[in-house]
Length: 222
Image 1 (tube, rainbow, N blue to C red):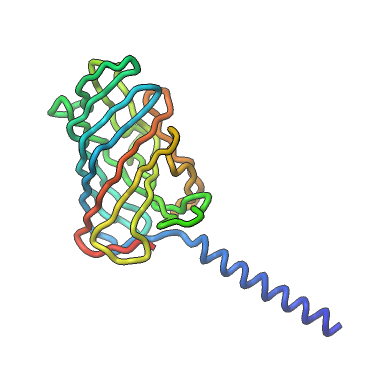
Image 2: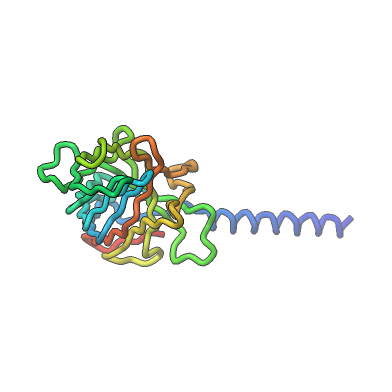
């Protein structure tokens, strides 16, 4: 009987440790300090969908850490943008209402932190930021003479770097492999699973770029 009780106690202890480890491993990612503003810049960004491509030479972005799980008030200006249709014809492209013929201005976005699923085998980071419009589903409406209007909507996730270290700089990497966005499943800090998906017109799309971030003060993602 004593042996049975001891074995039972050991099993309870093992389960408790296992649950504790699992809880730590799946802890929701956080960012801080709240209230810190940020600016971002990138090199070339490429949007692709159904044989059509929009390439922008660079972008600038702004935002603010509005909670421990959210970056809010994000706007992105894509500069020197050119479109190419499936037949190879090229043209400057612009967003609805933009003051320049090769400028794309996104609607206001926010970014929610989450864990990448499945967890990368040997990651620099397993934390993603999922970008989505604050209101409605539309990121931007693109106009160009070489194709019909393209409405970009949905969500897209970028890999967050660095993590677990306070820094005034960071990166947000939107990678694409074999025509598919690298991050396809995210467990959000705010709760729930999401499969980020960009739609361009009625077709699935991908966004490929790296955003280099500068924070007004040292920020840590953990």
